[in-house]
Image (cartoon, rainbow, N blue to C red; front, side, top):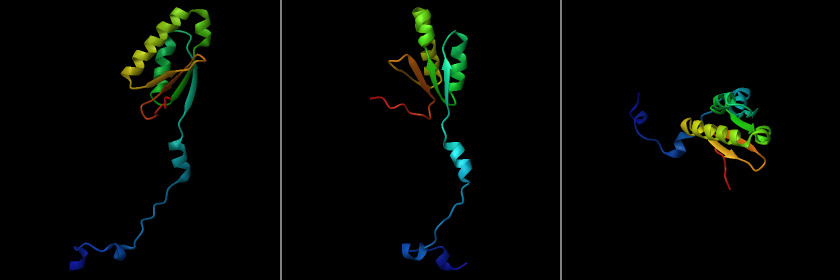
Length: 111
């Protein structure tokens, strides 16, 4: 070891570049965000939807239940909202009767 190994170098002297080899297929798989489409029909569906929403974006169809029993649908949506708040899941509704649930690593842009 020489004394200049311990002394800071000027930027012109460094000139070395670090090259990393990355497995492109592996990176592509990790970057993909999965989306699942589910129907909200009964109370048991809420737990299943929350389980999926922790890992991926979930689009929930509510039109069928809305036509059958609007009051029951509102109760299930309130249950979904409570569970989303506990699990830090972002939830948003659309005018068409869909709910979109996104885990904490996905941000929903609201305008």
